[in-house]
Image (cartoon, rainbow, N blue to C red; front, side):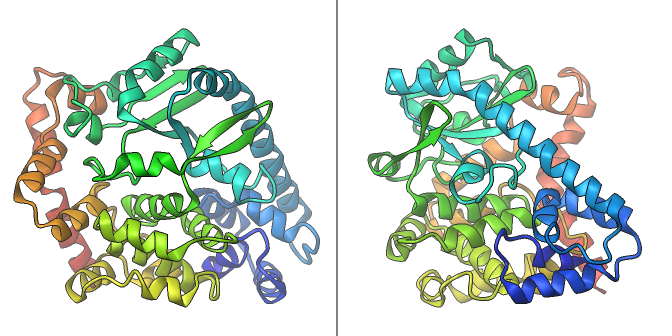
Length: 388
């Protein structure tokens, strides 16, 4: 029942039937501490308040006060984040650099009706590889420091390699900025990366504006990102549902992006799960144009079954690179597959040491490498044992 409450409240405008269901279920909740903890883990505390505030019914006043505080706290945090981000955006705009605001930092302004409704921890940008070095200098000039675990020990060449695998973080006080090299979040460059940038738009952010990639590209990226995290947070699926309802969305373009980048499976599955949770949110024709092959579809259903996603039960934490594996499967490019997998599974020692806290000279670091190598098999075994 708790899962149904969260699903009913996960969209800003869920409709009368969903609101009535939310009110009915909220009245039967006995353990609100557990419910609030679950809502926070799903990224939904502000949305839970948003959808219960007008008619809380039997929800305890203390619970509504907690939800209201969470809403106001997220409003203050997001507002401060955009304020602190403004100098960077203005410097990027003046220099003509290509850094596109994406994911939570974009969605809070672009698809949610109130900036307080979409929590985000860091602010993500997709950057053009040719502008990466200049963007790093801009960040340094503004007082941002690159976090040690984000800095690979060897540099990429802009066409592939380590820069495509690891996304650096830059921090200034409480503000974290993460730079991504791939406009679709994969572990290798796009065949037509410049095509995304030629259609980029602008989004107003306080007194300046941010570059954003086309909504169709963002749609694909959101689906890939949600799968990278095994759909563990309901807000990521809500993002997909809201973007899918964006007026004027070009589904033929989405299908071309997914087909050309070999990500029809991850994009289709994310949209399918969102459409199952919120019927009518994803157009049937859009899904039909993205349907993957039988083997890939079966694999997606096995790894991330619809029933498990809807129940919000604890699910296997599949590796972050799973969408890249599906894309490699479709590409049938052995050279690209070997190169990509070697970079994912065997990162530089200095990077892995910094990321895990194990000294670079310690034999324990070999265990970390083995863990990366066998993680998919171990996760699959646990999944099979859990279903027996």
